[in-house]
Length: 145
Image (cartoon, rainbow, N blue to C red; front, side):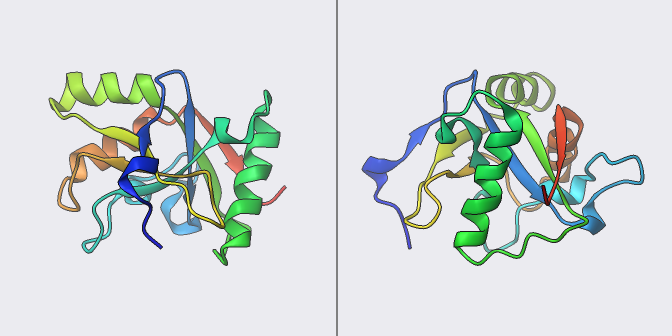
């Protein structure tokens, strides 16, 4: 269900998002591959979840909130997958400096997943930005907790 434009807003730079990485998109050392950040050809953004939406100060509780939100909307969180965490401001600045691209982290909110966000500003063909996002991941958390 699309969100009205008036409900969309960019996330503050000091906030964070989590991206679920399928098992095949995780390296043997536990870090994400570029493939975890590729936009699907028919989509205009990469789906993520806004961690601070859950109003918890500790990361494990935020990740638990994301697990719950994804489960509530029927998303299959595979046990061998993981959540990759990106800092919004650091990511925006780094992508702008290295790729001369303006990515934006936008809150999209859905009825069953109010923490749903999207990373806008790159295309499915932009594998360099997907690789840069994978390198910028600061933390990884197990898919199940």
